[in-house]
Length: 293
Image 1 (cartoon, rainbow, N blue to C red):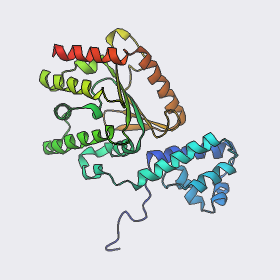
Image 2 (tube, helix red, strand yellow):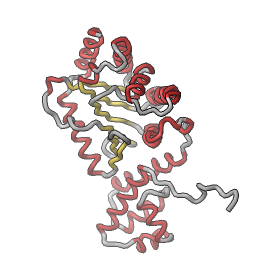
Image 3 (cartoon, rainbow, N blue to C red):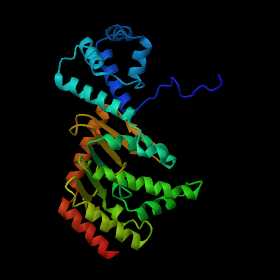
Image 4 (tube, helix red, strand yellow):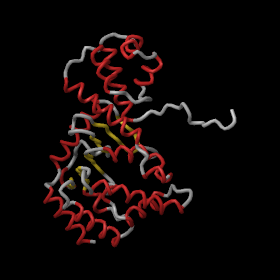
């Protein structure tokens, strides 16, 4: 039909919605109930229940409680976690953030949107300084070195967007950031010695912020459980209560959305931090490498 909005009526799945839907699906199947039972409890259609379990529609608090009652869940801690997840998903869907004006972010859109409403990030990085801690010159050097830009003119706006994300580290409710880096990250000459020296100097400065913790796993730590993959654990409540995991591949960002995935990566992160230098020892190593530059 002429003039019809192509997006009208379209359902959008979100990472948080899929996590919530997956939890509710698991609870329903554990009670050997069908979607028709859930539909009756919500006074809704089976189609809506299916969309809820696929993370395609937001869920109100009364509906979360109704499903928990149907599934026999009485633990207020569990119910509270699901309510917090539903609220975070509703907040995410309502946000029309600054990042929408940057098509250069491409597949990073969902991650940046979640970063905006998160309370804490725990990052393990093997190859480069995390985006929230990068200087503009370092971002640009990474983008050029990546070599995948069809239009080089897009690099400038990409750098601008990357730096804009760093506003989450300041303000009234700053993001809590715990970044653990492999020593090789400090020594990789991204953009040359001058750019790396400035980047390490910036890293030392940001690490003085009360909401930022930086640690380094030295070469001498030997083999460890983080050698095969970098990842970020994103928290929306107290750490461990409501977490998602994001990992990078060559072509995209992968979300690991189950509670089991979050628990496993939190344990790996904990093991990595035990092998890392203390915060003060890490800053001393960063300063030493900076002086070598």
